[in-house]
Length: 115
Image (cartoon, rainbow, N blue to C red; front, side, top):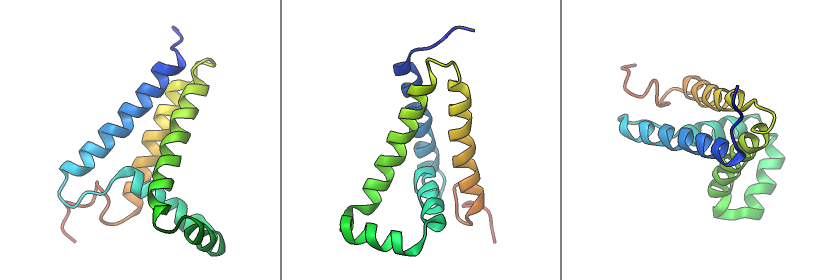
């Protein structure tokens, strides 16, 4: 198996994120995979921690959450490249986005379905 560079791995994950965002914008009523993953993280976070974060970041809380999600996926892909497990990171990112979209009614997968 040929190893890929950290930059190639980060570009692959970046491309996957970009495609997910494009597809969600093309679906009527679709929601961004990053937004859905962010909502799932917020749902799992204790209330007081959310309150402190919102108080500190004020109106920048959502952009900071999205940027940190993207940065974490890019870093995970770049760190996995020398080990050779980039496919696992890319599959995990896709699975996480898919699971988040299936978890929420109105996600990209269920947005066009009649209720």
